[in-house]
Length: 522
Image (tube, rainbow, N blue to C red; front, side):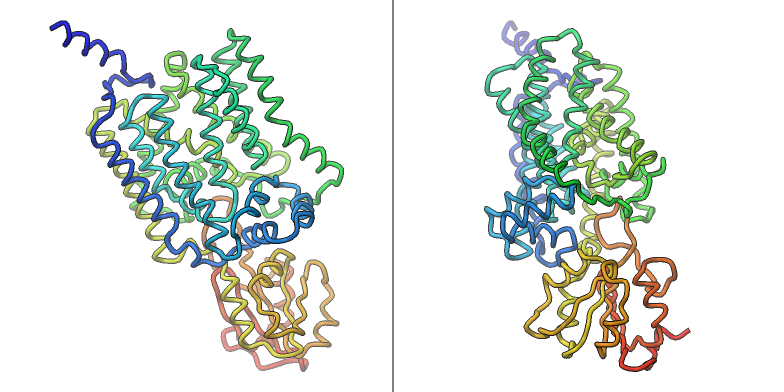
C-alpha cells in the first residue's frame, strides 16, 4: 500500500503545468514513439513530394541567383533590396543548389526538423507526450508550414530558430540557467536575428514577458539583456553596413491591412487560405477559433502557474498587433509569411485550449482540424494550386517559337531575371529583353523588331496566399503599365497562351496592324 500511495503521489506531482490541465501524465506512453515516427513520415512526404515540379517563382529565382553568383555580387544584391538579411542566402552556397529540388531541399528538411523539435520541446517543457503528438500532427499537415517548407526561402529556418530561442528562454525562466542553456539561447537568438528581421519579435515578446511576469527577477532581466546585446552584434553590424548605402526598398505591392486581415492571417496559419470560404472549412475554422480563445484566456488567467503559455500569448501578440498598426498607419509590411515566428505559439495555444475539456471532445475537435489541413494540402497538390508561376514553361514556349530579331517585353526587373533563369539563350542569341519599368519608351524596340513577345506576370498579389493567384484580364485598363501598353496594341496580338501566373502574348509589329487574335476581339 505504501508503494502504491507513493506511485499515486508521484503521478499527481507530474500533472501538467498547463493552464486548466488536470490530466495525469504517463512517463512515456507506449504509442508515443510509433506515433512520432508516423507524424514525421507524413510530414516528410508532404514536404518533398514533387519538390522540383513547380518552377521557381520570382523570389526563389532571386534566392538561386544569390546562392550561385559570386559572393560580392550576392551581398550587393541583398544590400540593394534592404529588406532581407544575408544568413540564409549565404548558407545555400555551401549546399548543392543547381536544381529546383536542391534549392528547396534545405527548407524541406528544416520543415521536418521543426516538427521533430516541436514534439521534443513539448515533452521537455510540459511532460505530456499526448500534447506533443497532437501538436506535431497539426504541424505536419499545416498547409502554411508545408508550402513554406517547399519554398527556397528562409521561413522554415525561422520556425526552427524561433522554437530553439523560445525553448532556451523558457528554460532560463524556469531557473535552469546553466552555461549550456545560455549558450544555446545566445546562439539561436543571434542566428534567428541574422536570418530574418521578423525574428526580432522574439526580443519583443521576451522583454514584455519578463517585465510583466518576472519583474521581480532583476538578475534574470540583466543577464537576458546582456545575452541579447551579444546576440544582436551580427544584425546590428549588418544594419550599420546597410545604412551606408540606403536601399530603395519598396512595399507598394503590400496593401495597408484592414481589421479583417488579422483573422485571415490566423485562418491561413492554422488550416490554410486560398481566398475562398468553402463549406467544409467552417468546422475547422470554428474549432481553431474557439481553441485559440480558450488558450489565450487560460494563458492570461493562469499566467503565474503556467508561465510557458503566457509567453506563447505574447509571442503571438507582440508581432501581430504592432505590425498591423504600423502597416495600417505608416508603411505596410504586413505579409503572412513574415509571421512564421509565432506559428509554434499558435499551434500550442490551440491544442492547450482544447485539452482543458473532456477527452473525447478535444480529440474529436483536433481530429477535425488535422483532417481539414490534410485535405487542403492534398487538394493543392492535386489541382496544382501550390504552383505559383510557370516561368520554366514560359521560357520553353518562347524558345520553341522565337525567331531572330524578336524582342521580349516584361514589366519589372525581377520578371526578367526569372525568365532568363530558364531561357536557353543559345536557341535565340539575338533576343532583346526589355523591362518596361526601366524603358517606358518602346518605340525603338517596335521599330527594330518584327515580333514582340509580351510576358505579363499575374499582377494580383495577396499577403495571405502562398500559391497560385486568381486569374486576370490582360487588357484591363489601369491594372499595370504593361496592361495599358497592351491595350493600345491589342489589334497586333496574333497569339496568346496562359501559363501558371504568366500570360504570354505575341505581337506582330512589322506593320501598323496585324491579324487580331480571335480571343481578343471585342
